[in-house]
Length: 160
Image: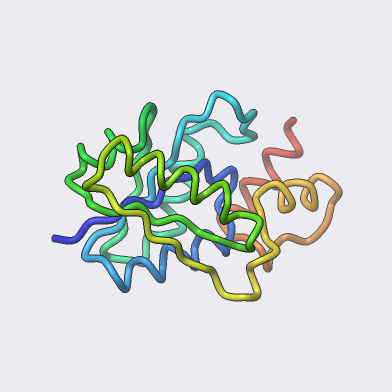
């Protein structure tokens, strides 16, 4: 079984992320969307909340699972018997950072490949940070995130 891991903070999951998941699901037998614990980022949603949001958003994709991890990505990938990491690239500016990560991961475990995927061009401008800012300012984010994420984001911002 060809398993790929799509790691990220997903704070929150956007339609661009979802597009990459759907594309990866066509290429691999099993895709695990792995929500990372990232201490350096101040997440709006807890890791458990992000897992729940992702899980609901990918529920219609039979070969996609949601999980969480903490620590080295290569160790998590190996623990899931995966051989590929999927990374989304929105623009050329993403490439340099992602390329460095891919090379470092290869140095840590040469058996793990990184696959770069581009979302639809309509999502290339989209980022979780921008979506959160639009939502904070009362803007309509319905075209940028799945409905469950929109509802959670609006609720979270009202209570914070």
